[in-house]
Image 1 (tube, rainbow, N blue to C red):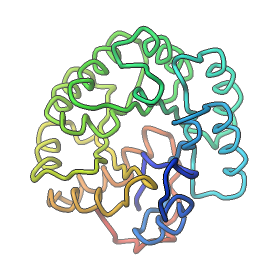
Image 2 (image 1 turned 180 degrees about the vertical axis):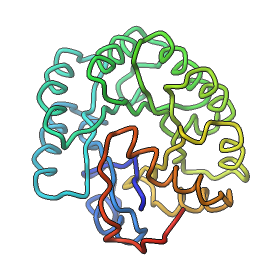
Image 3 (image 1 turned 90 degrees about the vertical axis):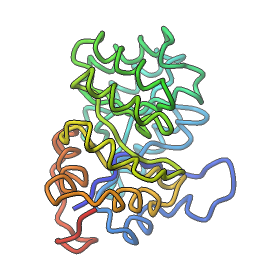
Image 4 (image 1 turned 135 degrees about the vertical axis):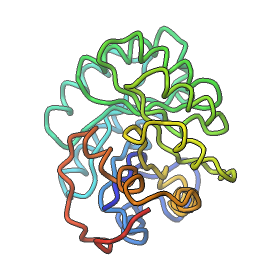
Length: 252
């Protein structure tokens, strides 16, 4: 069983063959479920993308959604959270700090995450470098907030280890277009295994990158299972599907 907690739906702003291939890509890599944000929401118009994704999610059952929030358009964000989270197809919130011009240390992001905390749902937040430390600080400051550090800081993965140690409501997922040797193994050795998730950044990045990086860490069976799906199922309160698309014995 594999749950991808960092994936996308819809075309990007450049040509790429996998832009509309969510389910085919999942089949190829044995991903049973994925939680996706609409690319339109992330890079252009959050309400329009959320609306389009909501319609698409009604047509299938292997994808779940993130309500994308633009911290600089909080009135619209609040409306979308009220509209989509109660339906069950959206299980979390996505915030991209760079595309919205809302750094983690900004007051806009603090307001947005305070709003998200009130929903009781986890938020996937884009992190890079030392910004993951700022996210840990916000997590500590905002009661009840649960956040996933997208890319686990990328080249700042050692900061992500420190951040996870500072706040027990901060989770890490590994997707990145680079795969430095030993990165995953070092994070696994330094972080509570209950707060590690699996993400690919599909369809922007081919899932082979994340699978290869995790496989190179040579994880023990229990840790691999936690990362593959158990932690995600607990965090998002997902009832895991049967392993229809992959060998039941498959592991990361």
